[in-house]
Image (cartoon, rainbow, N blue to C red; front, side, top):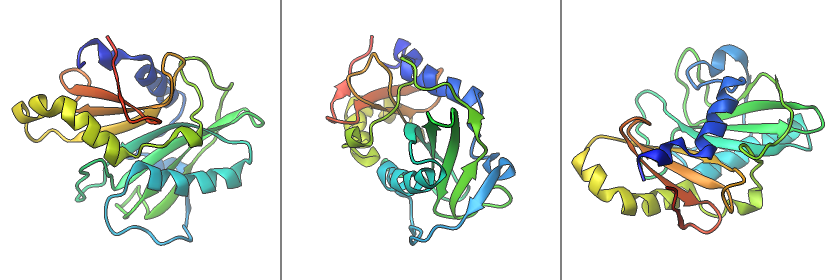
Amino acid sequence: MHGTALKATVVIAILALTSCGVTPSSETGKNAEAVETKSPVAQGPITGKTAFWEMYKSARAWSSDIVPLSLESKEIPGIKNADGKAAMWSASFGSPKLHQFRTFSYSIAASKPDIIQGIMIGNTKPWNGPVNDAMAVDPSDLMVDSDTAFQTALAQAAAWVRKNPGKDASFTLGNASRFPAPVWYVLWGDKKSGYAVYVNAKTGTVVKIK
């Protein structure tokens, strides 16, 4: 699973989005608009779906026709991500009407100078719409949350995790035509020598990629 699987289409597609202007969390504050959230900010790391819906509301205020493209866990210094929950999440949304996409981030805490507590909105970037390698994510297909995906993935990765202690898991949600539904890409370690498991975000089953 952790060999050629790391080169799967959904990861390539998300990396392609990053190269087109999705800003990493360490740089978000430099090129983003800080926005206060009206809902209470969580006191500890949260699941992907929890953060997603907070960002979705802000994205809808930007453009009513938005389509979700990706969701990624991020890290904040001093706060440990664990068990499928993260202190910060980043999501990309596209607007077919505007031919643009932008990245939204949701953080449970501030980390100077770049991260504020709440929602940050990145600058708009040109976007030509979904393609087979980077399809939109239907929110109704997001049935399985990141903490559940973590437990499913951990059952597959348990032996590797025991042999490689101290490797935290990161999470990316994406969709591509080769998958029957959006998938959670759960990665321990790095892309070169880590271990990855793909979990169907609609059914919770492990996606086998060879």
